[in-house]
Length: 474
Image (cartoon, rainbow, N blue to C red; front, side):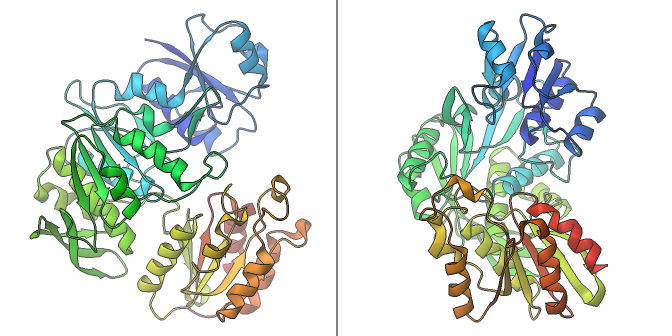
């Protein structure tokens, strides 16, 4: 067994991988700053010893053959990283560690794309689990059908490992996209759009990473690509392996028809190569989630599962946290929803799905511009066009606005003007930083009506707005 030290162990993926390796019998420890629940509790529950804070002293007693796992949030100047470099400790990036010790010789299923990765990865993993294949997996969060976000394969041979393949960079010493480390046998590309403006200069820059990803799939592998996404189809055209498309608006190999939704699930007829082969019920909503279900079915079929087994598993799937998660329904039948949507496309399709699910009810969208892309004016126009179903839009405080010059930052005043032209009520929160996000509660209280649906849209904490809303809604 090996020994690992995780520098930045408090990150969701880092902590999940650390726990998986510990469960596999390896010696695991690490450090991070400001470790607090739920991550500190998660590590403690799984008996992972860690240091709260970075210090050279933390490393004085580690074994000389310990692998030093560096999270991608760690950069030069970190006290422990500098010590590791000075003493020639072996550095490894987390994705490389996953490839070596968890994917290993298993069939590697990698889920990539700008949107839908977490839900699709969770779906594929659940279908394989329910089908008895005991897959290993790494998901960007903790899937609700499991108690952990990462584990090794439960089979000693002919196993499967399912990975959420992020296009973000790997480590300070390795600027490749993470998914290039995961050795795909079955690869999924849900969609390709511009994002992550802090590391990519353009859509063409992102496409370059996806081309490299496709080029890693072996001849006997499979690429499953969104046939309704022109950029993804273009990238797939260069594959050396078999390619199958999934989609709703194309003559794809995998498609769906007769899509219906109620308050509990969506139902659709599954089409393979033009022929209906089954009826699927899944507790997900919106056409984008039907797409996620289609490609998960395709991957599970390639892995050896029958359509009958897949049909039985689908209704038992539990949505990942913060993916159209119903936080609760409160007085006056006001429903609070939380979603990770932080890109204009994700905002649009999430609100469209809520509009279908809660037809006839008013939608209030609370959006926090937090990502490195949405805090800039790159999506200035797109953000003015993605809130269609919402009657009221609350624009949270722009996260760390000091990073960009005024002419590069998101112009929320202009956004307010554009959305009000569409007849929407718009509130710009955070003008008084000392009263944020309580100012959102103060705005909403006189505006709320019976049967309203409030959607929290952020890839961060929104300043603790969810808890304040729960308390105020009673």
